[in-house]
Each structure stands twice: as C-alpha cells, then as structure tokens.
Image (cartoon, rainbow, N blue to C red; front, side, top):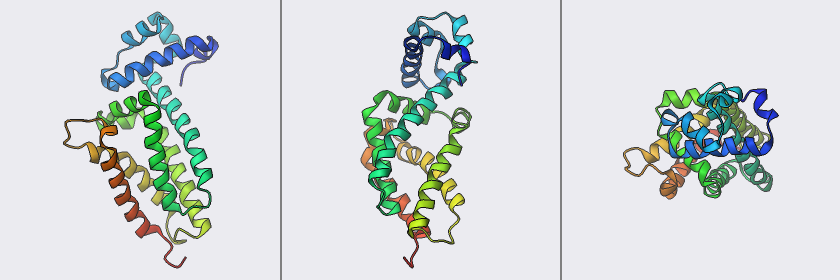
Amino acid sequence: MPNATFFNIDEEKQEKIISAAMKEFSAETYSNASIARIIKKAGIPRGSFYQYFEGIEDLYRYVLQIIADEKMAYLNPVLTLMEEGETFEILKGLYRAGIQFAKDHPKYAGIGNQLFKEKKAVRDQVTEGLTEKSIAFYEMIFQRGRDRGDIDPKADIQTAAYMAHILNLNLADSVLEGKENQNLMDHVEEYYERVEKMLYIFQEGLQNKKA
C-alpha cells in the first residue's frame, strides 16, 4: 500500500499518478513496466515517487486493489438482484457481469490482460493478499447456497471455495493457451463455454441432490 505521504497530497495529484500507472500497466506487463515512464506521464520527480511508494510492486499492488474494490462494488448489485436465484445461476451471472465490467473499463481489462502474460510465480507475487478475498467471496456464495438448500450440507465449503478460486485463475489461461491473439476480450464466447463446463462440474459435485 502507498505510504501515508501519498494520501497527504491533493486528490488531483493522486489521480494523476494512478492514471499514469494504469496507462503503463495496461500497455506493459508488470515485468516490463517502467517507473521512469510512469513519473514522466505523472509529471513528478523520481524522489517524490519513492516518498509515496516503496517501489513499482507497491504501486502495482495498489492499482490491483483499486480495480478489485471497484469490481466488487460493480458485482454487489448483481448479487442483490439475484438474491432469490439458484447458486450456480448466480455464479454464471457473476462471470457475465465480470466480462461486462471489463468491457466497461477497457483500461482495467488491459491491465488484466498484461497480468495473464506473466509467469505464474510473478502473478502469485503481485496478487498476494487478493487471494484471501477471492476465496472468501466464493465461500460467501457457497455458504449462501447451503443455507438455501442448493448446496449439499456435507460438502466442504472452504475446499470448494479454494478450488473455485484456483480454477477461476486458470480459466483465462486455458482459453488463451496457444493463441496468437492473447486478448481475452476477443475470445469471450469461448470463455463463456469454459465457464459453463467448469460450473457444470462444480454443480454435479456440490449440488444438494435431495433439494
């Protein structure tokens, strides 16, 4: 997270720095991103950058956190609208809403697309901390399903949530593997097909057959 100094500067300057960072991270992978280009776009000295952030990883994590928070705010109304829906239909709706979020925020989608190009070790490093939130989100959905009677009461919710998180991370990789065009937004229909297949497997394993 940024140092306290960052939050002491005016909001316009904060937004200018974050905007410059997002432009860089949507154009380059994390490994190829440059502090020099970011500070040039933001119009700040290098010394000021290090007063605000420990380094480029610190800034990158903060940008990912901003995107994650905005995405959750975007998805919450979907959850509310589907309050009475069946668990796996809700999950399908959330995946579709997630794609719509990416379409509505192309810069965020660009950052995600660049992240998919990184080696797994790098991705794990820069997304550390977001994993727990993702698993907790799936736990909440599955627990809600259990409370409604959709999910088998004998199913281990924590294990299911962890598996859903891992599969979700690798879903995009499975779609993009071997393709020259590595932009996920150009393969949306195939992505949806993979989502349907993944959720079918989950449904067969978790659904309360007695309900």
